[in-house]
Length: 140
Image (cartoon, rainbow, N blue to C red; front, top):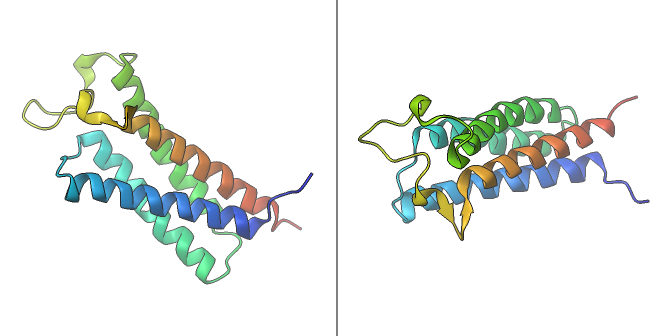
């Protein structure tokens, strides 16, 4: 069985973080869809992932995956909370979105029929897993 190298895993994690960051910028800035509060919190973790993992690749720092794991866990936790709110597992009364701002649970949270929180959760999970794989290759 072929094993993925640490640099390849890190490169894939960076590509996912970069594509996710560009996608949310496209949704917000080009399509004009204002982000809800939880989306902003998720962005606070995704944007640095693209920068930190990219710099780690640039400088050939095989240990940068540990920062990828930490950021992916934080963002994933928020995305999981957002997904729970979206599907109704988290009660509406503790919804962080304001009455005047965009809703965390309405149809504006769908892109191609897929909830944005689910896409974010999948991205954070993949980035975290790939970051962890990148560290296995550097251990001695």
